[in-house]
Image (cartoon, rainbow, N blue to C red; front, side, top):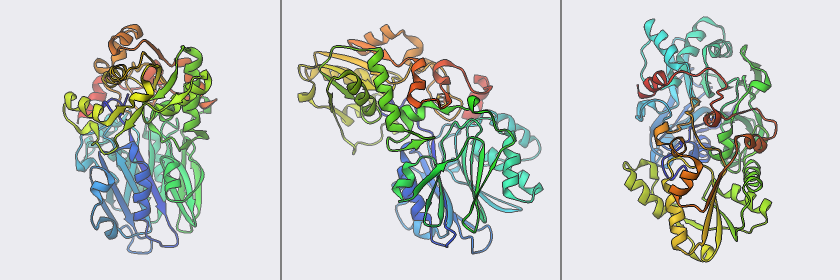
Length: 477
Ligand code: SF4
């Protein structure tokens, strides 16, 4: 159970908008990012520019914390401009400090470039070393700066930013959904595998790029379509959108959307690559019910991301669905607490069991994942104390066994309960009456024929990945 026990971490959220009619966009970016806050809570930032003003002048503000902690004064008022990009971040690579907050703003001979990135490059270390050997000086420890440099270096030799981007991406390997602002253009890029999501929206004449469609709804924009894997879209000063594909596009069957977006990361009201996240989770729960049926009185889900899967389980099994937890939204975010003890006590305060729902009942408890196992153990213990006669746990993902190199912070093997224990051992340790994990073969059913990455479950990475030493050296740098 993830966000409560500091297990898997969200990655990042990106947002960009260009209003050719000259309207200020910083407040819209703020509200768009607010809808993406679930993707990253450690830092955020907004960079804007005025396409009718002095070329390349960028105003930006970044800070550590949630949006309402960072933008709490006049910051937004001071960000004037009709084009802009924004970012919310969880640090999957690079240390947590304000230098690593995005958007990154680069001033170079061709003007300026503001860049917001979601994902992780697997060859960032290699690229950075090569650039450092030719004199490049890096100001951050994040791979996004490597991308910005690759683009800036190409731009010096090419007639337009689009061509520079197209050339630069041939050097990148890994996951990237990028939103960039050059002095007069807004650009969106999605890696050839489609690992991280990116979509296009429109409000009046303004085009918007966002990690998830929920950000479009929040600003009353219309969803136009997803950016395709390997696509580069450019929005120009006439309010027109242009599309181009990278030279390194890969065939559809080799593409690899991160299945964890559907299981856990993405917001329930988002739709990614034609698949509604809610429907995918319902299907996941239904698969669990078929594979692991049990005699029970009620099906409940762990808020928030276990709820839809629980509903799917209930619908398929015919066992009534119920709400067994009250979530106190006013308790601070658990992952910022330094010690495990503090985290565990925060979990207890944050989720309390509704006794009348579980008393005397055989309960099916559905969650999206088990990382360390501390939270689910607490919940089962409390449910039994409240009178549940049996607690059968169903998990809507297979056990995590392998690291992710594409922007999701799966804890190291030592911390993963599934890497050290069999399912039966885990069942005993968490105190459940039965335990069933989703089968790897069932993951595909959640998203139809969409090609997926499921490497953290089966180690079939969609591309060559670095060995651990290099990965760790880069992340710690
Ligand atoms: Fe997503 Fe897992 Fe693939 Fe990482 S390894 S991109 S978390 S499915």
